Image 1 (spheres, rainbow, N blue to C red):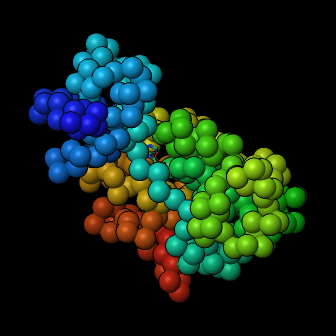
Image 2: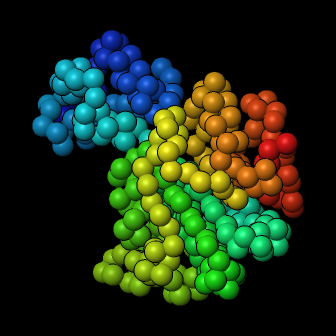
Image 3: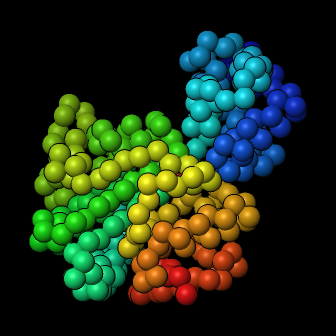
Length: 281
Ligand SMILES: C[S@@+](CC[C@H](N)C(=O)[O-])C[C@H]1O[C@@H](n2cnc3c(N)ncnc32)[C@H](O)[C@@H]1O
């Protein structure tokens, strides 16, 4: 039997329930019973790295405290961090050609634009936005108060985002070659994003199911590919809360598999070409 098999076999049904509850309580991420394999494959490395010979041992250690760094590592390991530059290209095109010019016109007196990228994963999404703004709206970036706040639950992802270092495989996904050459420098086998873009993004830890203490009024809110992990009451609670930070004429961008329809009818769908956004009614 391999070490992995030994670890996989030893989780009792009570351990599985404990872990699912812990993760749900801390992050709202729902891991249904059919996804037990995910717990095992993602938590085996956490157990190993923290000196535990099995997942049972890891769970026994977790049960000793209600909270702590090990609990955070377990929750962090259960987040799915799939992302890419300019993911699902259409919303980016419409943002550049329609929604941003409209917002810029509306905000010309205040000269302020605020973006919140909730669930930024390893940073490709907020840096895509920073590139779009810097390249297409340079005078706005240089002369207005433009803020990009990027948040995530995962400390590991926030560390990766702030570092702004990407592998060849990561930059091959969605980043046009001219933008790679213009905005990144090669650093060994990595590509390092230039400081002028890195400096445009403020990265902070924020759990969407916790307090949102430092979020100002937002013009464009990216909350893409994260609501899918939550159950309906959690989605409703988050959409309700974000009405308090999104400006009445601001845009909410969700992932392509996500919608406010049948979740919160107080948003209207705005579709342009192949892109969709949502606005408070
Ligand atoms: C699939 S990624 C989406 C990344 C990016 N928004 C995109 O669409 O490419 C989901 C992200 O949601 C984060 N996440 C999961 N639960 C969260 C929570 N309760 N609060 C904040 N972020 C959370 C994960 O850490 C992960 O980085």
